[in-house]
Length: 168
Ligand code: IDP
Ligand code: MG
Image 1 (cartoon, rainbow, N blue to C red):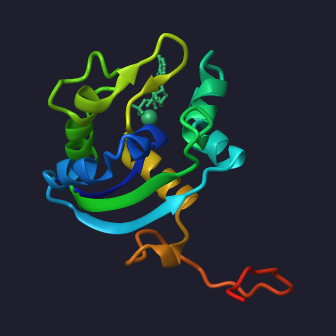
Image 2 (cartoon, rainbow, N blue to C red):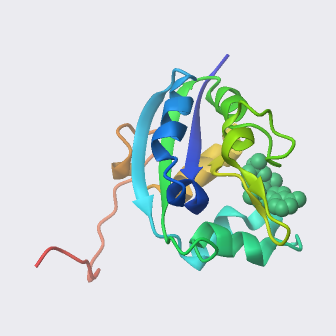
């Protein structure tokens, strides 16, 4: 068994149904360590990169609308990084299968997800499906200083003339 990292997203349907607490309680059954957490307003660019592997699917546009929050009119997702032994399999077990109708009813997706007649599976959470995907996804959603330890190699760079937003 290896120490793995995994990216979890509580998707807009999870947030609008006030499932954040329940989902985090369920995730804690996997006895992993939380390494990062933040609320994100998902841009089209981020959504396209995250779901790159599904670009050719007929539901791709609807999937982007879902993760960006257009479907539920709640423009945020909660992004979490967990680490621990066998993290990916343990979390995927708690999360359940992609299709909420096929997912074990005691899993998060089985309990809280739904299949709409038009559109994508509204399955409440995303969870990385391999160590390669986890690395790609964590690097896409988080900057190194937003995670409590350097999970992957980092480098220091100096940027000039970078516009930043600060508190006024
Ligand atoms: P995963 O989220 O279980 O890893 P992926 O195949 O990576 O499943 O698909 C990403 C997301 O796209 C799913 O969580 C679900 O919301 C949506 N999706 C995947 N396959 C289908 C499908 O066949 N019909 C409708 N929505 C789907
Ligand atoms: Mg996937």
